[in-house]
Image (tube, rainbow, N blue to C red; front, side):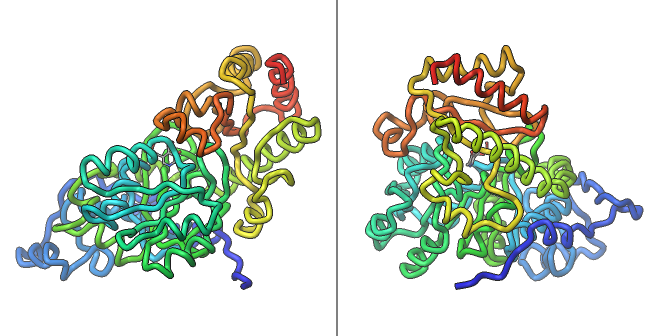
Length: 408
Ligand code: PLP
């Protein structure tokens, strides 16, 4: 079926209409934890939900809804084409709150076996121990296995648009179809692919983000967001039963302001991350290096990536190289950082500078050996988040030099 094209840059631009208090071109930071009312009987109306922030511009307390955080949530909802959104203190807070809102004690999640290490640990260890919410991990590309894993207590099908670190592309339309046939919510972590892919347009019910990465883009703050229906976001903020409201991983309005200021150039940054990653990967591939990038003909889901992507933003800024073993991976990164100033040996991603890490011994080290094997994460796998500093041809030469000297 033909989908209508979506331009996230236009959607973002249209959402940017909040003036500052004195007519400033930037919104004001509402640095208040509590909000007054003119008449005392307005307060119980806010507590009972008869007056709301959206409908009536009524605010209560900043762990519930702060106007600046609320505005960022609306901007991100526009980016992800959902009816509503709210932000929180980290990507992990967004993921945990979403799962806890959708699942009760004893319910089940079916999740991709290729997810960020922290998410894996939450699903594999933390939630079963504390809440009895269990997870069956599956190969997300094996749709028959995904469907077979769904049971009567399954409430959530969980995946990442592009998996961390293996860059497996989820077939979001097919997964939404399976989930909805079984009355299950499809939750998609779109941290690796903001702007590039819009999961809600492909059928995802809830989209979560670590804003810490590409969306903020400056590696200077930790933040997260949940985007979905107004009904679901309302449930997260419910005074009696909302997991964001009651567990309290609240975003500071100053952080919301910072992230909002960086949204207008997110589409430009994503396009440039993609252009640079594609150039480097094409060049390495043409020299026979085994590089994994969703924009390369050799990527098993390249056609799927193209089909699911919004036009004009490419395939993202992340690629992986398998150096064979850990020592070679470490040597490779040390040459790049310490000799060439190519980037940093650091976790995280989506920064102006290139960030490189050896996944099995860092951001996926929560996985045991069997889980690492199932996810396809070998000990020498290096994940590279390409930045946009430096002359591109020079960057390519630096990369090739480090590969040669690391024995690849
Ligand atoms: N989701 C993905 C795909 C990630 O890579 C990360 C962190 O690396 C997270 C979620 C967690 O985000 P945060 O560090 O903002 O809690």
